[in-house]
Image (cartoon, rainbow, N blue to C red):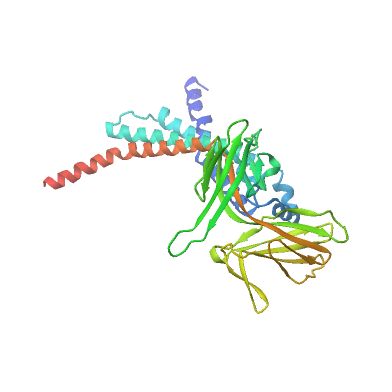
Length: 393
């Protein structure tokens, strides 16, 4: 083979740039990201779904769990496969940008208007690259947790304090070591004359620093150091003391954060309290305000004025005891248990997020806005000139 044929052969041979800039590679990465998104939507995700629900799903789908768990698909948006897909997408975009700028020429033979458009094209590609970098940093190092506090409770940031938590695979220290105290939780229903309100007064501190008092309103996050706190929900937590007459279990005492279902006046506050030592569970339902009608307890409103706790026990064989109504400061006997309803407080749930990639993604959005401005500035000038020309005619 002659020297000229060898040169032509090398020119025809696809290199790394052509491979990375291939549209087929882009299609493969996009399909992979779609598949990961579907897995994240169909498979219960850590940090979003409660751990007991995930364990139940894994138990009923043992075969699928055998393949999904090692791949990290129960945290699909922090899985190693997502990081690999984002890295490939980054190099694919970088290769396309390199081909357009260095090989095809960015400004060669272009007028000033077209040069500005091409410069906007360059900034837009740069914003995409920065956005992908931010996504990689978030997927690798982000921490998101769910905290539930009762009024007066102080929680120190540690793994076992979270009811739900998920973190990136490369995050060595998942916590910021803050202290969060719930001072007061406020919930007001919306009326015809006034909007509703969901807010919480908290006290935050870290290390030896002075505590900081702050208010967190619903959908208005609070930033403390590098951590963001978002108020998600507020409910009621009755103080329950349970004693067994047969001494099957030691006395239990504490605040039970009842789950909230529904909205406004249709809200319901109830939960189950498992007692595995006794082979049964207690069902707890709270009415913030009630009255007795024809011998039955009826909920009257969500305003906290006359609360009552409805309790019944359910044995593992499915039999249920009659429902007992207990007012604050009173006790009642249900089977072998003596149940005392003490104080009633409110609880608040917070989404706690530490995301080092958030600022990078925000910077990419600003770059994209600048890029679109540069791209369409010549067109806007042309439109203005054409409008003025038609105006003079």
